[in-house]
Image 1 (tube, rainbow, N blue to C red):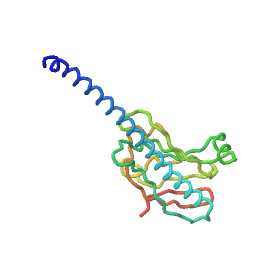
Image 2 (cartoon, one colour):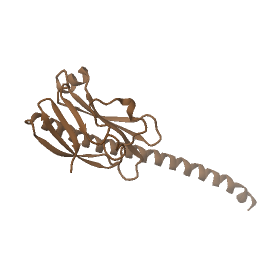
Image 3 (spheres, rainbow, N blue to C red):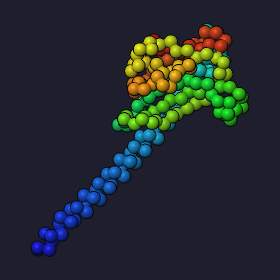
Image 4 (cartoon, rainbow, N blue to C red):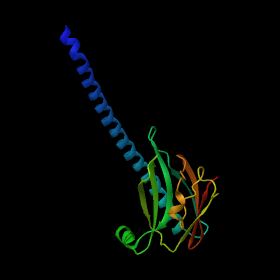
Length: 186
């Protein structure tokens, strides 16, 4: 009987160590799943935005479309969208993806809250880089609109500006042959 009482604390310690190991592995697997699901969802949303930009660009002046940009992570995932930018694509990227020298690229940066670096989701847009894409939204509404969706944006302006995890209804309009305006719909 005494021997069983002496070995009980050791067995309990081994059980706690095994349980802790299983919990760590489980949490790691869950975070990987969340990350993968959010990346796929964000990629689909950014791809839809790129397609709608291309449709408006190919249309006549005055054409417009309403699109949805969904930045919601899967339930229970602690990810935030840091910024969404439309930038000139490099010659190498444009040639590799589209076979042309110029294009635009939509880049969305996702970060786990508290992290300094983030992962980027990008989509090449088949629009020449001499087309100006403007954002017509309230620039002071950092946490309610999409202030970072700006063709001429400066990456240093994004520090501490987290976009809300929500869906945005956007109106994309072609105002001239070389100008597209994105604004909040409704």
